[in-house]
Length: 112
Picture 1 (tube, rainbow, N blue to C red):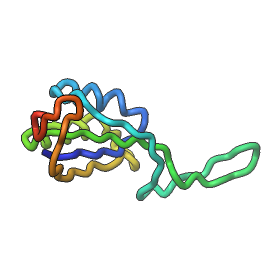
Picture 2: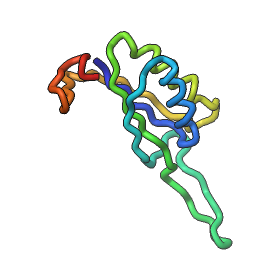
Picture 3: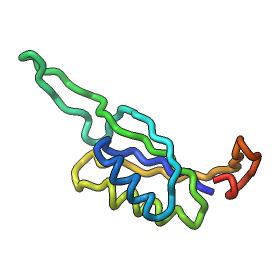
């Protein structure tokens, strides 16, 4: 089992959710986050004063998948979230040692 963590632009959430739904991945956790990478924020004007926005709004999506679904899930996220511009985001894939469904007590891949 793997945990896919994707950091994406907020307006791409519906596209990513639809792309994952098409490959039968239905569960995800979404968190509003702020951060920056190479783009290092930007400047904005407010009432005539210029100020720097260091941390840009992003969404963090977490998806637990079976090993055989990792490649198709990450490809779906890339295809749906990609704009070709700086700040499109990142995908991190990590191992999950154990999964337990609280309601039934199922463990392992059956709990996904």
